[in-house]
Image (tube, rainbow, N blue to C red; front, side, top):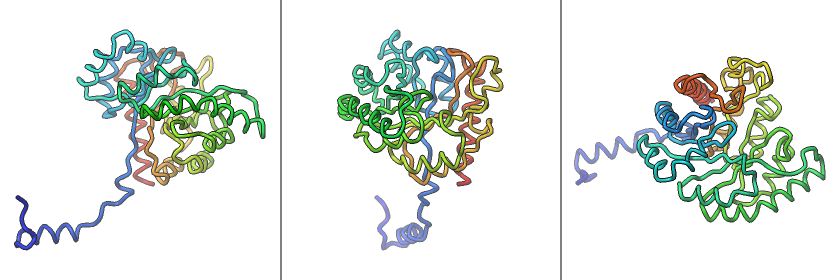
Length: 302
């Protein structure tokens, strides 16, 4: 039984509680990190899961081919075996990335997400790639209208469908993101990829402030030297935050100011699809930890 506040001991504890400083909202803010399995190429889940645990990131973003093949591995082993693996390493699936399916073929994946307790599915957009002005606005509105039936099903299943801005896609540059944020109903969000935007931290921070809670997934990812034939794996690492030339202090502050509660993935692509970003799983994990620690250092300074 707790001490009565009118006893000496109870009064002392009550006084200490009243005099203690209130927790700072800023100090309580944390990013929700997720590990994208494509960082490990097409490594077996049995090798990826213990590495995620070692990184201290408890949620996974499961990728399909060609960058990864872990989503196919789940189908091959079955949900029962996969769930047992998750329990063994005390991990969860936070995201299913399904660029391969496209935005209009997600009904079965939404049900899969519900069965696994996965809150987010990431995919791409469809529509004209070169629209501008009024034509862009109309195209984004049409895309959102076509997505509404799946968005409604996603809401019923406790899932958000996050559309990535991707190069040469309908949802790509800031205007298309703004229109999407205006038109999108519940169940639709954005997976914001700085790699595909102007490499300007101030502009990115302003865009984050505009999009607000429409962002469901954030790739901690910059262009660096990009990805092109002849680029070395070492140079490709400049895509990671803290390695490439772009600073993320302003975007991190914008996410914090917005009270961002979506996912953050320390992210990059390998030079060739299906290959890990480092030769060994432990090397990949070291890069993820390095990027995550850099991101957290910016949060502490913000």
